Length: 169
Image (cartoon, rainbow, N blue to C red; front, side, top):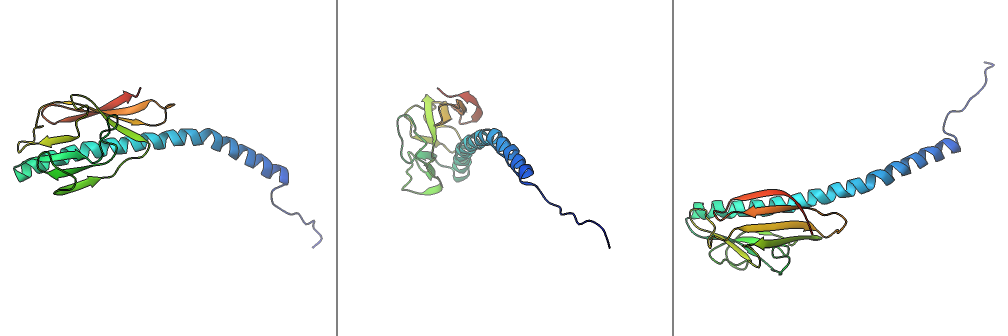
């Protein structure tokens, strides 16, 4: 029983070095993670809008009448960012027969351009075609000016949608 007794553990220097390395890794990784979260948020809002349009088209065919996607609080540069709903009828109303609601979005704009600029209602007839026939795009952009990445949703005159990457101004 005559051995030496040693204690295990970390020294203060080893602990400080580990903390320094961890803080450098967090400093490098956090901005990239925030950018990833922002891109996922844009993708989510884009998919919500595409889903609302597809839902309105399918419900119009199923019901045999007009179903509309209606902006709840349209703004000239953010027609759809204030929320929207899918409602029965033309022009439809978020106070009428609502099939589904989509809440307002924060820090993201959904701006209609082209033939859809200042249009607050997308109506689909019993054949699933866009009533009024004016196709255009909805640009989904974040409020962060340092990140110009966005998504553009093209809506054709027959009501089909297509989404692609877009550089926000």
